[in-house]
Length: 428
Ligand code: SAH
Image (cartoon, rainbow, N blue to C red; front, side, top):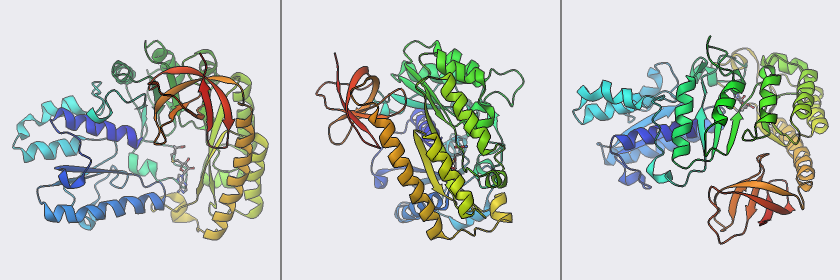
């Protein structure tokens, strides 16, 4: 979501006449877009921000813009006091405060309304920034902003505000604009993407939106993330199965395998229901790959409760598990009402147990790709000079080739597989 937000800000600035520079010392404007989903992300953001202070001291004309979840949607006087060298504070997904500041600085305040009308997040006039023009094969289109679910551990609803589906026309015009500029693959984004449209009375569902996007000429692949188990309708799964451009890859977090922990997390489903969902997804979408997210060491999680998560992963053999150690976030229900009582070493131990388990599962899944020929969409050349691309199931594939493969969708025979990637060669 932050990558998508950053691209939109960069796009807005270019429309104002600014250009990208690689060196912070050369910049007139520096935007730091931030994530605070875990303490480690927040620490990183604060570290980077603090490192910008000397630049501002040397060059008082420099405009520093702090953006994203460190700022949040509510006015935050404490943050302003803590970082007095920051000129502009912007909520997630909103370039307006920066645009306003820059126009005022140039004495062009009178142009504000007109400029903002052109630069609003949903202007339907998305321009890929210069630095990525012609290079961007895969891009993101947010379809649901904010979140209203309130998982007890999660800070995102507090920082990104309540759930709001974007207008279908704006989504289509974003997608059309990206494809017209060379993009081949679009990933629709939402904190709970399968809730798309449900907060409005007359919007299509996510399935309906996928059908509409499917008609765009030149668009080769469509993905969406992240889904919540309770909103994965058969209609959605059938669109994935039946529409060739919609990729057979589902990101649907379980977070924990124990029913009590799931209830404490306020997730709204049980271990058994998740197992049935996975069976239903696999039944309706042949060859599907499934990714999940898991938090270990949630407050009160016992060894036996953790074992339920371990057993679930061992049984289901999913393609990807994004693992996290629980990190209390100030203001969330779990931070206010539950003690962070699983020691750090224990969180690490559980994390590594799942990591090892998942590595062996994925190695076995990938081994099945040996000698198979699969379509790969190539994105870019890696530092080692190999072309990097993805299978329909979102597996990373590297191919040695002197040809220009960027943006090409080509059949590749897989020669070698490991838990994190595969190697293959082009077949003519
Ligand atoms: N709505 C998105 C959330 C994105 S955050 C989704 O459902 O995927 C990505 C992942 O970060 C979450 O799925 C969760 O596993 C993890 N996460 C969120 N809050 C956390 C916290 N307080 N501590 C540790 N991990 C957390």
